[in-house]
Length: 262
Ligand SMILES: Nc1ncnc2c1ncn2[C@@H]1O[C@H](COP(=O)(O)OP(=O)(O)OP(=O)(O)O)[C@@H](O)[C@H]1O
Picture (cartoon, rainbow, N blue to C red):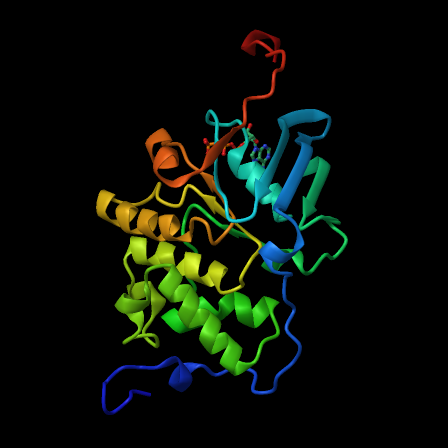
């Protein structure tokens, strides 16, 4: 419903969600617990007995933006997927991961993980509904929050992702009408609305033209110091622009079979 005085659709008008207030599954504040948000020790990804990725060891400190670099096929995307328990079928992880000081119990129904460490994939995933539906998606499915809290969190997230001024007047229009850069920022907002302890960004600008890349970069740059970000990028200049430090993943060493032997 439009506000008759301004013609602007407001979140109050358009959010239709749980009315009653349940407890909110919140993550302890990043600042309050430990300076280390994620600690990864000797993480390896295996297919059968074959090591595809790693071992990788690193820590992400609160509020840092860290670049994850390395040659094609070294396992950057797979590391991100392993951290959020979304490994492709047939691959398994070895090693330890702690989030906010607690070991993650992968595969054991650690339901809090999905809203604590959030992956924004390379290609923006935009659902068929409105811009608002898309921004609310994670909150609706992963967090029990009141209408007011959803209101605040989605607006804040859209502002943080640098999208609010472009969409606040048309939150109820289809998300499919957004440009690629706007879609990527919408996905960023959807993740930010969960107030995750860490945000994993997989090549967030690789599918974008230069102008859209710049707007997404501006949004990521604005998170620096406030959010804990792990950014996969092929572009050393981008890592230089956006990150405090870099972690490198190298191809695992292995004896290569020759084609003749296969
Ligand atoms: N579903 C899968 N089954 C088997 N192997 C896989 C699967 N997914 C990825 N791999 C392998 O895991 C390794 C790491 O792949 P990944 O895509 O994570 O690398 P990357 O560093 O992100 O590469 P790029 O920079 O090209 O995107 C590669 O050897 C890849 O072939």
